[in-house]
Image (cartoon, rainbow, N blue to C red):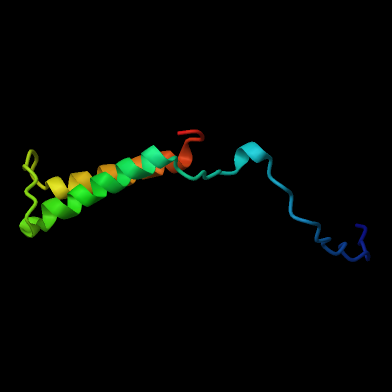
Length: 85
């Protein structure tokens, strides 16, 4: 049986490997129409929740303010993820 007296080689710390461009998630600023649509829907959600300020928004859905706010943020998220939208 042969014994090895050689110590293991030390770990060499190299620079971190750069990921290719297509592997990284890239966020883009939303275009002005997408931002305005999102702000309009979020504003409608607030007005329908706190409707006592003189502006009445007709209620078409139960929990309408929740759905309006959700759609507003989804529109904004899609505007940030999709380039050129």
